[in-house]
Length: 407
Ligand SMILES: Cc1ncc(COP(=O)(O)O)c(C=O)c1O
Image (cartoon, rainbow, N blue to C red):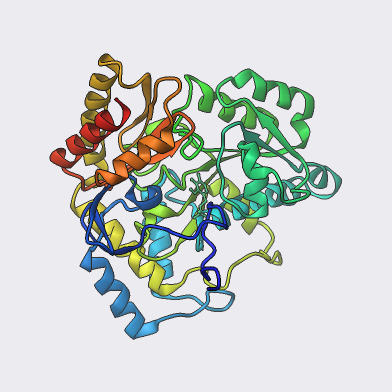
């Protein structure tokens, strides 16, 4: 027998058997043996509106019948791409900014990193601009798997093994703003941009420490660097506002997004650029932005985004996320009081429960899977990031399952 053809993401290539899903509806997914699971991870931090939403399927299908695909390289455009950019900027902190579209979070990150360096070169010109290439990354950060994003990660295991990565990156501490201040004190004039998730997701669900994001904003302003918030997980309602920049009231210069923009129904990502950034890009009419993907502004993906954003708006899911957060936090509080958990972190729709020393998170995850609940287990923590349509009974079932598995 040849080995299976499919090489899985973030898995051991030698592993041969996987759980096979065949359908999904609401917050539940079903495997090929008919077993139901509550999807308490919204797949991979992205399915805001839940599964099986025919409004999105119908919108994509209608768009495919009309204009299934076309690129948006100069001189082409299409209605869904323009409307998606317009909707996204109007929900963001940059209503007068512009939106670049791509197909994934990794592409959005590499785009933002390139724009960070480009703006320095265009703005400062010649030698000074060429010298300003440093990107400051954050310990524990996850920024996707393209070369730029891999280099930007603060998770050493993910950076190792690929040979030389992108030069001119410096790492700051995940919580202590003084470490960023030291990098700026030494290299300030050479820093093009700082990249961080406002709330760190895949690295362990760490909300920002007090003053951290504000401190980064000030350091960037004082030294002429751009601040990039990677909102691939936190965008589209996950933290109780459309963007975490609004939740934490700190405005960056560039925002990356993906995942929740379509709830995963089609692959879409992008970068929202502030007016300040756009002014630099637009200054010279002869300047050509030599960046873009074949599928940037794909009309079918954009149709999914528009239908998804409609659902989030019409069903009040952004505000609902705070209710979900209160219910999850109450449940986790009780498990800490009972000594089942050592603590928890998170906000609104994204949480990590920390397990007592010596408890194996993967074993807890597997027990919960057998119990019909999908969570993510890493090191000593269990992540939960459910669809924003999850009801109270299902939240309680997830918490009960965690209690049984971790006890
Ligand atoms: C903050 C952040 N940035 C970037 C990415 C990469 O996104 P993708 O897997 O769509 O390339 C992720 C994925 O989890 C993410 O959490």
